[in-house]
Amino acid sequence: MERAGHSHYGEGELPQARTAYERAIALAVQTRWVRREAISSHNLALLCTEQLELDTAERLERRYLSLSAQIGNTAGPAEAALVLGAVELARGDATAAESHLAQARRAAEQGSWVMLLAQTRALQGRLHLVRFATEHQSLELNKARTHLLAAIDALEENSVGWSEELDPGEAYALLALALQRAGQPDKARDAVKRGERRLPQQSTVSHRTLELGRASLEGRPITAGLSWFDERGYRRVVALWRTLAG
Image (cartoon, rainbow, N blue to C red; front, side, top):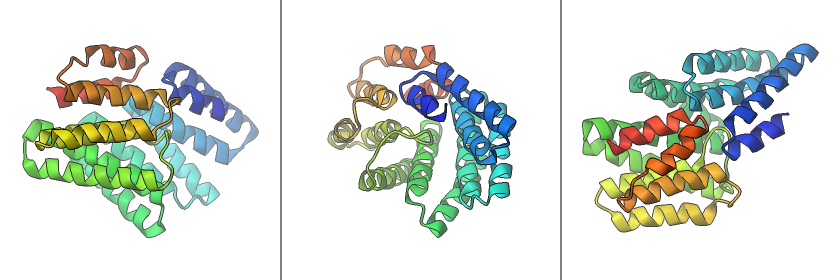
């Protein structure tokens, strides 16, 4: 069920993915399989964040944190901090999000967890790009570029691919927006092309996100692209891109 959930999630089928994760949790509770309950709770928390069911996402991730302590999952606190940062960012509380992400980054660096560090820096990049969209401070834009570039470099060094924690297509697309707003249109277009070359075609969500980035760079409407996400319940994606386009 977990594998089916991942497959549906990566293809943009959130309702089917949610059903798979919920069934996995129910079976894990029934059989007292604590590790499986923890993993499925974490994945469902990520999915609920995309659907902007943020109280549910937070509850599930705190459950994951508690279960991680029971099974000795040393990466649990860092992974939970990452997701809680994403939840707070989706809530619009950048200060709380920044605190969680700083915690996740420290833990990832101390544990030498390369992919977790990449995911954290991608989220930090998203945070600073959102701040730039509302505050128009060049420092925020510079921070966004730095974090997103670092995240993408690490992802590419470790066989970039879609994961529940991070849609790498979003990292490339947001980097492209940051570069465009910094007056570097050629580098912005290259960032989108870089993602298109690196990401497998079966990563449906990633390529749909890259198309949002390309349309934005070319001055085309992103309405149709956002409709695809909206129809599938990706309310966080829709809200994010409306903020960035605003």
